[in-house]
Amino acid sequence: MANKDNDLVRLENVAKRFGPVQPLKNVNLRVGRGEVLGLLGNNGAGKSTLMKILCGYHPASEGKMFFDGEEVNLRSVTHARQLGIDCVYQDLALVSELNVYHNMFLQREPVRGGFLGILDNKRMKADAQRHLDDMGVNIPSVDVEIAKLSGGQRQAIAVARSVYSDARLLLLDEPTAAMGAKEGAMILDVINRLRAKGEVSVIIIAHNYAQIFDVCDRINLLRDGEIVFDKRAEDTSVQELTDIVVHEYRHAAETLNE
Amino acid sequence: MLSRIGGIALRRREASIFVAGCLLVLYFQFTTSVFVSYDNIGTLTQYAGATAVLAAGEVMVLICGELDLSIGMVYALSPFLMYFAQQAGVPLVFAIILGLMGAALVGLINGLITTLLKLPSFVTTLGTLFLINGFTLVISGGFPVQPESSQAFANVMGGNAYFLIGWAIVIALILQYVLTQTRWGLHTIAVGGNLDGSTEAGIKVKSIKIRNFMLCSTLAGFAGMLDCFRIGSIDPLAGGNEIMFMAIASAVIGGTLLTGGVGTIIGALFGAIVLGILKDGFTLSGVSAYTFDMILGGAIIVTMTINVHLNRLRERGRV
Image 1 (tube, helix red, strand yellow):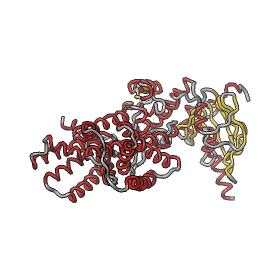
Image 2 (cartoon, chains in turn orange, purple; image 1 turned 45 degrees about the vertical axis):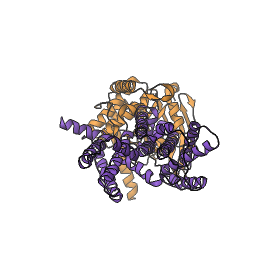
Image 3 (cartoon, each protein chain N blue to C red; image 1 turned 180 degrees about the horizontal axis):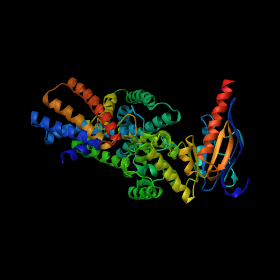
Image 4 (cartoon, rainbow over the protein chains, first blue to last red; image 1 turned 90 degrees about the vertical axis):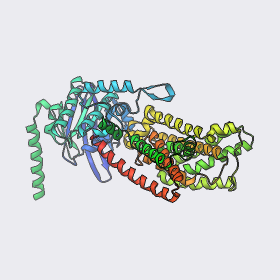
């Protein structure tokens, strides 16, 4: 465990059981400050369970979690968020009926007039526009309702909102799923800008590793509830990952035939 | 130019019901020739005033994704609370405030049962509907009483038709402002539009719902008081389910969705006025009340169909 102090989050020997099912056996995972980690794995490898443990939705059955150098026991999603761990869901997070800047500021709206809570729309609008420009999110206007935006734009806004609310670790679950090439490219561009700034750490869950490979600093592979592969992106290649996956498929096919 | 006006009409939810209202006024003025007159507009506001106040509160509840069926009964209960407080020696203004607090308490109960015991608000308020109706009948003994106040005070409290509609308009404007320009309004829309997302964002969704139930009930109580000063009698059988359904109809044809997240108070005011225009116009033209109900029913179905389909267009960004 080199340069421990540089880790924003670290899991040690984490296991999760649901009755007889054990989606996570023994996970050791670390994400550095400002690092983008790509977490790959087949369906059923335990990716979603791992994500839910990280964002405070499930408690781990065994193992330890460290955040910012301290051991933490996440009690709830709210608790995780207070620490700065934010899971971005494409559909869950935003209110379709509200416009972009109201969504960006939801529950943190700047107000005038004290207890009356009159919204400072002008400020929200300007701040939202500046922040989205900053992150490279392209939308027609911050005035439009979320319902009128595409899936990619929504995802980008959800990410932008989390970053703006001082998130320190973003968990992105299949951020480019069900998206066209252009849309996916916008999301990846947003992640790239975050990475260049280095203020936020990101874990991207994906099974389309070719698409996210370029934005990741490091790649981890989850198989049967364990991290079986951990390499810096520059030390591996899409080809190597493909070979591993193909090998896995063949192996699975052979055991099936036996 | 025309297409621009058309565009605004399609974008603004209130616009279509406003246009419908104008056309109806023109039609009735043409056929009865006395429709636009001081006296008749006075009559018209009697049909629309209290319903508009009830609808304003109901819209807030509908937007946050709930429904309040008990408002017609709170409308009848609240003036009695005022009356009994007055009988006990409380000055009129404070008696009114006590009556409104009683109404707010019903809202609090509706809200608490719905959010904490997790009952659908349809069921909760169906229960309180009967409960409050029975309670009002018990405390009144089933007999109407008369409000005691000076004529001038009664006039301001809705006895004068223009004051009545004035209250309705002021309340609608204030609530529309609350809905579109304050945190409360924004969170109300957010809770109705995306309950999970709002919870995730840290909005106190239960508090928002409870507050809107309380607002809605208080306004229902106030509407009941306006009408008791207008009519000069506090009737345990006044209002009830008919005025409740009229208020919901006003909200719905004004552009508020029952599914939550979408609604407008001004639209509901227009909706109540349009229903008033229809009722008043038919009375003037000598059309029977039965026909009115048929037209009301048709109007709800037609406007809802248009609303739903316009919504789809809006969401695709075509309009």
